[in-house]
Length: 263
Image 1: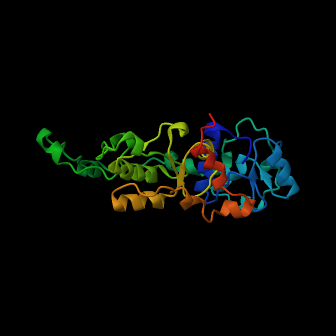
Image 2: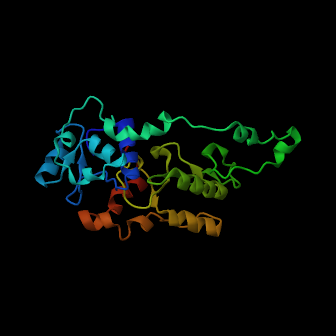
């Protein structure tokens, strides 16, 4: 996608996910579609050069509303018109049927209504016996660290490229071991990522962080009940696919972080 920022970009990513497609943060020849806000920019020009279809958000919205024929209609004028007043406005005739359930009155007999009984409210002394919710705990609900390490031995960790549920689980294990979540990239000692990503956290931390590790490092530390390894950063750099694709030594980028900070 190109031309979308902030909440609009986040909404578009969710739409891509719900449609069963795969979002890529960069454009390459393997892309099959480019969703544009305006017919301008480097991505748009490259997509035209590589003969990648360029469409508006309406194309993706129609697919989510059940018009799967749009998959083969990327050249239609309604999908190649850019500069729309409301990019996320649904196609009217595709949402009309969704309102049918509210147009037909629901008939419920008096006998059926009488048979409906709300569950009684629990008594005050029974409230404590209620089973805890199965929902994942929020970060603020996570208990304080069970270990206290010296400041020089305490890892300050950032996570990037994971779902929020995964991050919560990792934070629980991190705090049990005595580690802390870093407030910013400048205060971070360890960056945990499954692979090299073009996320804001990764790009900010790559030149200042001392260790870039995979989740397996944290899992191994948790199994040993202590933080291990002097150079865990090699667990991400060794065999890195980005290194093979772009022909550069990834480890040489963040070695200066062991010498001095850039900022």
